[in-house]
Image (cartoon, rainbow, N blue to C red; front, side, top):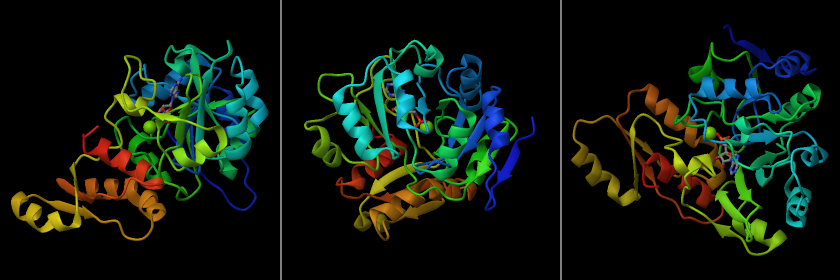
Length: 311
Ligand code: AMP
Ligand code: MG
């Protein structure tokens, strides 16, 4: 199939990609976190195409994207008070809520689980696309499974050109890391995947929260069970001091170095794209500077440790 490239001018017309979604096709689109690969969340066949295009294991559930808080009510069986508080405070934004699903959500979306993950993205194109399509949109990151998430349209095309109906180019994504995922179905709310919105920020709104790092038999949070976010090169996390001796040890290997320059926000924004650039150059080992696990540093280190195979 030929992948239609949609570049938006000032008067953004999203009628075509919206109709592709409605008819069961796949459309990649920008969000504020990373690019998503969207399909009609209520159409089981459309959802299955996402798994095929990405080569994603079928027990790895998808996030359903909505353009309005009200849309959540049809997708879940009940909205706990804490969920309402989080939506009021953080939506639209990089926070995904895991809740008990309603009957209308197909099992392909939730990987057979009784829970569904939902988010309202904070990106004009994403919101308008979902709104115009008139349906909830299931959308995992628009990369081939295990590859780093795409933060630019060209990354999506590297992985999925010819396998999806269309891509909307909205430039570089703002945050560059996937959303925070919080499970509100357990007694104490549990962070399944750290992201831009931190545990401390969430606790200010709903009180005590746990963080879970272990994967269950069915992937509660896909990122937990599968190798993820990884470049082809081997990734080693280092302190700046260790770099010279490691370089000597690695001898003739092609080495790439990623240092934390600037803020955590800047580091997060460019990390996945640096991984991809280094893969293209045939780099064999990437040395990445470890950072403090504080604030956004928790999410960055989570992705780095996964890329390094440490968790
Ligand atoms: P991706 O969009 O590729 O980042 O992957 C989807 C993410 O959605 C995973 O990392 C999970 O954390 C999350 N997710 C989706 N559905 C569920 C669910 N029912 N329970 C828990 N986590 C989910
Ligand atoms: Mg992903």
